[in-house]
Image (cartoon, rainbow, N blue to C red; front, side, top):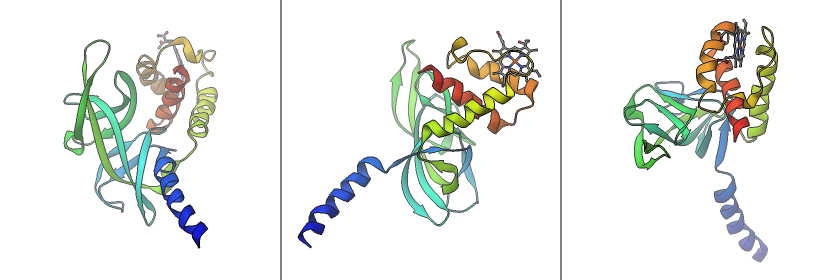
Length: 187
Ligand code: HEC
């Protein structure tokens, strides 16, 4: 009993420290409630979220990111065009601060909370990125040789992928999966 009293608080602290973050294993709608009702927008594959609670098949999550003023797209980092969340309306976000990047551009630090299907979350980011790598290798070397991952930086790949998804007939989900692989390769 004494041992249990010692261990229980330790378990709580461990959960608080380590068990609160997860990654999108695929792009998924962020719902206002724990059901497939109205959505606030879409969380993009490989983005990190804090998990807050679970309710049936859904997990309540918070995404914290950065966006230029007036945007509906929040990025994972200030100054890097790695899409984290695409809101249907700017009002989905709560502004929690702001930050200037190296070019003096102001990025709003924003937070958005809602519910995702627990099946769209994963704990292992490298596995999620690995799926993007496999897609890159199978879809991007058929017309020309595979371009090296480090040929362009994280802010240039997105516009190339817009052009190449049209060429390769990629779905939005496939495009983001490849995009996140190439962007994470850069770090
Ligand atoms: C259907 C054929 C086809 C597929 C599939 C394809 N590409 Fe291309 N790609 C092209 C053609 C044609 C060009 C040269 C003309 C152009 O830039 O549009 C090109 C050019 C490029 C360039 C050079 C662009 C530059 O500005 O230097 C890159 C990088 C590239 N592709 C990456 C990719 C990636 C990544 C994929 C997978 C998502 C892909 N390609 C899939 C046809 C294809």
